[in-house]
Length: 100
Image (cartoon, rainbow, N blue to C red; front, side):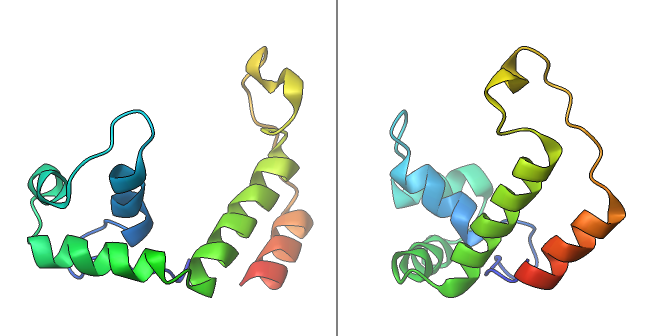
């Protein structure tokens, strides 16, 4: 995973951007900064980064989708039996090779 994180913290820019764009409970930049105990400037930078649609985020989303497909989490019946199936090492190797 190569996308931008806040320096010194384990908070990805996409997480902050998601809070900003949330359909259920959108947050202001100031609220997000307070929620994550970050400077407002760091939240603004993260949002600007995500708005620029960097390829790292697209790649990360595609990798997550491939892992969910391989584990069965995208199967319509998964909600009835929410146990991801083990992903064979060769499948994970293929995913890593394809998505970095």
